[in-house]
Amino acid sequence: MNLAQLQAAVITETNRPDLVAETLQSVLEATLSCHTLENFKKDLAEATVVFDTPTSYIQKLDTTTIPYFRSMHYIRKTNPLINAAEINNGLPPTTLYYPPDQFAPLVEIDPTDLLDMYGYEKRDVWYQAGTSINIKSSTPLNYAVISWYKFPILDATGVLFNSWIANENPYVIVYKAAGTLFAKIGEDKSWAIYMKAPIPGRGNDTGGLYYQQLNTLLQNNISTRGF
Image 1 (cartoon, helix red, strand yellow):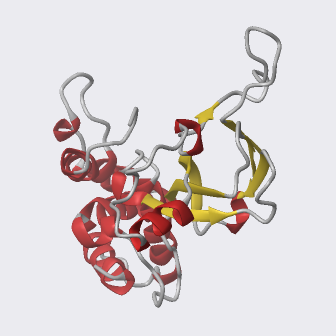
Image 2 (cartoon, one colour):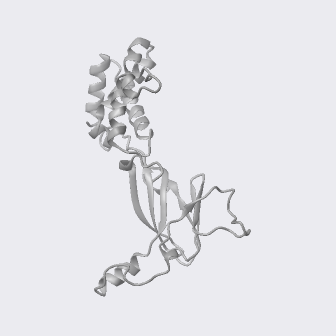
């Protein structure tokens, strides 16, 4: 469903066509809420970063420049020029030997855990402080592949609105938005139809309509937690 269709579906559920602004707000809130429940694979994006100082071992990424950035998934070194040179010479990529640390994945660490057991600064690591991703490499770092979890595009005009959940499992958003709207106007009994909590240990299917749809969403989209 697109944004207008989501709004229309919520109005059908709530029978409150007079609450246009409130319905729109509830749909946007519900969309954001559903996407941030889990680390869904379909919220992942990937890009190659080219740093301005290619000989530096220490680099920074500003997360405000990463489109719709929610949280970092991984960072790994890469060298597309090496692979391109091999391909141009008629060789399959990575046929030649290169030190593994030139392509190593970087390990996320706590910013208070910068030293190894010998008192030296850890290398091939990264940590986040505010909107800065700080990277320390064991080799000069010119290129990196980064992967991050994205927020959905919540364009209230509907022109740019983009949500894979709205396309694949729209009623989890519709029912969440309907419950949110009923909560805002104090309709507790109607709210419970959508948002009643599941019975502990009995699964989401024992909850309100939102939780029943949420169960389908989670079953069809395995979280990348621990991936």
